[in-house]
Amino acid sequence: MIRAILLALAALLPLHTAWAQPAQPLTVHGLEAFIADLEQQALAAPDSVQRLAYLDSALVWYDQAVPRLRAAGLDDAAIDPWQWTLNHGRFLQKHEATFGTPKMREAYARYRQAYELDPERLGAYYYQLILYDAALDTDCVGLIEIMDRAKEVHPVDPELGGYIEDLGWLSSCWPFDWEDHYDQLMEEHPRDIAALTQVFEHAWYVLSYDKAQTLGALLLAQNPIPAVISIVGQMALEDGDPEAAMPLLQRALNLSSSEEEARDIYFGLGVAQQELGRLSHARDHYRRALEADPDFGRALLAIGDLYVTTVSQCGSLEPEDKAVYWLAADYYERAKARDSAGDSLVDNAANARLSNIRSYFPIEEEKHAAGWPEGAAYRVDAGCYRWISEATRVR
Image 1 (tube, helix red, strand yellow):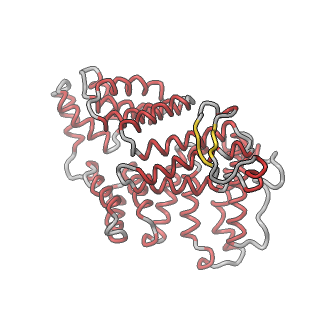
Image 2 (image 1 turned 135 degrees about the vertical axis):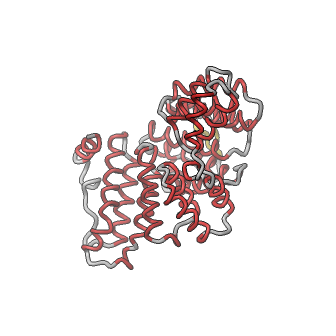
Image 3 (image 1 turned 45 degrees about the vertical axis):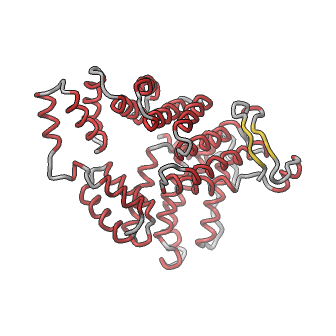
């Protein structure tokens, strides 16, 4: 219903927008350019309704791209269905903030399709995502098959190898039936904190949320360790309840005994504040996470994302709005350079974000008109951006 309403609203947009047609005769380059224009119009849209309408229209064209190009007389060698499938997933992932988290599962499905079309071409980063998706679905056959192929295609990638090792013990794919152990524990030892904690953490890691929630509720009443409280808070966040998550995460923080624990809890508090729309408070918590670990790449990415979100909420893409992207880029570049885990997911995410925002930096004419010489200091603190109050440089 919501999608239908948005598409109806899109019909009210100017002719050059979502309901325009790509140039004829249809070509791969022409359709790519047309979709890119829809994306650019979305990012320049004055409100979220129009932004989503443009992006939704681009998705329609992604859905139709390969059959339309075939109908135009192009063969698959010219079309490259694999690349269209991968790009479709990347588009969904790039615009997760607009589409919402459920679209991420659709992005994973597109990456899985790309894997099935040609596993040899799929990068290590995308293998991690489709492995994660298979784990979410407890698709043991698919998980093991993809693990084996990933090792063949990327035998020396350390991040992918570590990820596969972590997933290798996924209990729902073990011969050992841990759920029988869960049932016995709940019946015979419902107050054994150590045993409950072990099974709770296991249920959480293998994505058995119903059992994890039951165990979490039992443990919260029995003085659990900070890690348990933190996980229950994370579960509340994933359930879309940041209000419930915040006191749990704060309780875990008060009991935490290590910098790493504090870092992760502060990050969770930042996510909760961000979901509640309290962007400046979210930044405060991300900064506290960085105090605990100055090279924590995810927190640097998150602050950059806050600033991009602020532009979408405040701006009309005037030069002063576009200049905020310089500051976001600073954080994405720092995330790439300083991530303490050497995490390829952080690196790839930073690269994707940088690629997305660079085309929206102020152009030369705008910088000249505003008196912004290349390399000069620029402070983001005017109007809607007053809360940011942070310096960057003219790029």
